[in-house]
Amino acid sequence: MNVSLYIAKRYLRSKSSNNAINIITIIALIGVILGAAALFIVLSGFAGLKDFTLQFSTVIDPDLKAASAIGKSYFLTEEEAARLNQIEAVDVYSMIVEERVFIMSDNKSYPSAYIKGVDHNFTRVNVVDSILEQGTWFQDKTNQIVVGSGISFNLSFGVLDYNKAISMYVPKSGKGQITSAEKAFNTVHAVNVGVFSINEKLNDTYVFAPLSLAQRLLNYEPNQISAIEFKLREGADIAVVRDQIQGVLGSKVVIKDRAQLNDALYKMLNTENLAVYLIFTLVLIIALFNVIGSIIMMILDKKTSLNTFFNLGVTVKDIRKIFFFQGSMMSIIGGLVGILFGLLLSLNQLYGPMALRVFITPTLPYPVRIKIINVFIVFFTITVLGVLASRIASARITKQLVRDF
Image 1: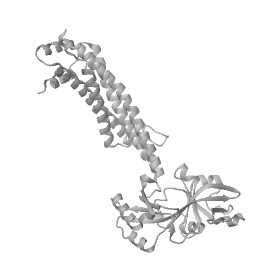
Image 2: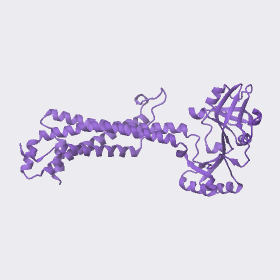
Image 3: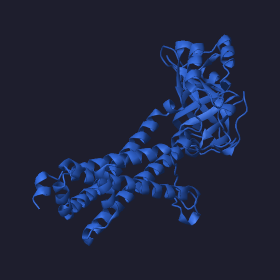
């Protein structure tokens, strides 16, 4: 058996004759436990908060979206549509027309809206019932629309409000001088039949309409669209399906998955996650200074024993290993206990009594998600920092220290 490891275990289990050293050791161990628990809880809480945020941002995002690579639209031929229908991993797809529009209602204007024309398959690609706040979804091939709650509020109209006419305008394409407003814009009149609520940005931006209405407003051909949104079958390989769709539609489209459609949001959340990890790692580093101090105090307390070991032939290197192993084991054990403590608190937040949970609002518990990867991240961080701290502390042992007692 490794002599240094054996002695390190004995030192870790036994109490020192100096009560102050025992107190310092306990404080150092508690610091490691609380640091590890805090890091795990924060990572779990942030993972839950990330999922909570994304569920509002990605609720109407498809599994894959094939948008125009050049310009704002492209043509989908009957042959391409037939080949898309033959891709087994594709459950259903919806054709989309999207463009910025100018909305007017009862002498009020709204210049920053986007119309999103969708076909009858859109309700199969996305669950629209969960986003409707008032009214119903529009019927296909009508002048009915569904607007965001922000647009409804700013233009002061509700559902089936026939007293307030709703008009949408899009500039006509072409060249030459504009001689009148009527000739400058394409116009459609619509009836609002529903109000949706997802998040502030989408509520203030989008107007859902039948595909035919959007194509008529933009002077598009029946097979001219802005994008195709795909819902894949469960268990489908997104990378494989992406290649199959790209093979059908060619270079005229750019295909993005859900994460790429929200790349700015994902980058922001990942940056915040990294920042939180680094901040709490700094807290752990500060806590491990206690471990360094505890080991140095232990070295000074055991000078008599170290001198005896040296006289018996134990090398300085092996004596250093004793305290290196002791500090490493203290950090690892403290880290494991801390992870277990953090895991129990996270489970309580998920499944525990309501009285013991932390709430964002009176009815909404703070979201938490337990991920196995976070367990390994915390354990790896504690282990690496603990080993470094133990190495620094054990390096204080010199030949002169153990010999000149």
